Amino acid sequence: MLQIDDLWAEVEGDEGPREILRGLSLTVKAGEVHAIMGPNGSGKSTLANVISGRDGYRVTKGRVLYKGQDLLAQEADERARNGIFLAFQYPVEIPGVNNMYFLRTALNAKRRHNGLPDLDAGAFLKLVRAQLKKLSLKDDLLQRPVNVGFSGGEKKRNEIFHMSILEPDMCLLDETDSGLDIDALKAVSDGVNALRSPDRAFVLITHYQRLLSHIQPDVVHVLSGGKIVRTGDASLAAELERDGYAFLNQDAA
Image 1 (cartoon, rainbow, N blue to C red):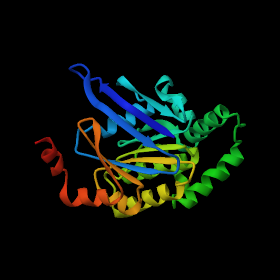
Image 2 (tube, one colour):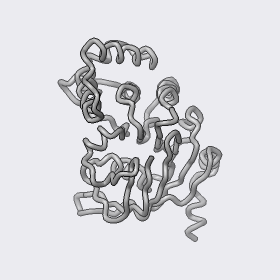
Image 3 (tube, one colour):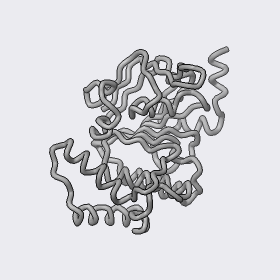
Image 4 (tube, one colour):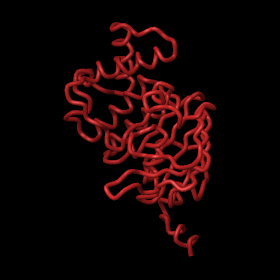
């Protein structure tokens, strides 16, 4: 589903562009869950932002194929309509726009892109209420402005709710577990697990093994210095939790 070859990218800053990704390669197949871990500043969030097409990042070398198509040639909104979803580390607040309006507009834009008719108000309401019930969320969430006045846990659960309605094919979760208490972490994890399917792939960016105690990854990568330096199965996350990233210094010595 996603193939990244020798990706180099920089981010715009006050002092000019700064190179973050340095030759990153990654392949994610449909149905797989990949976890990406690594020290602060290694490039994890940059990777998610580059894949989603977020402003402020520039690819200087390499290629990214999504479903066999050149992803880098697509604008961010086109990538979203084609099924890429980014759950932000710090979800954006949108004052004056309620969840119901926001989601219905986004969903129908995606449906039109895929040649499907818009969902009318009744069908959409039935869909969102079913998902709210599945995720154990309250109905008043629909009428609240997007993420405005939400606690950290509510924002992350709202992101998972959005994901459940839009049904993306490639889900990028950028430190979705940050700031969550135990109950919120389990609720978010349950939501992700409910969305796992043979046609959908996940890339989970996280610092901690605790998220992966609830969501079993198929593959775990360590990102350091802008590229993947180690790959393993789920046991690698437990090893990192126990030993940290000291091996990175040993390898560099």
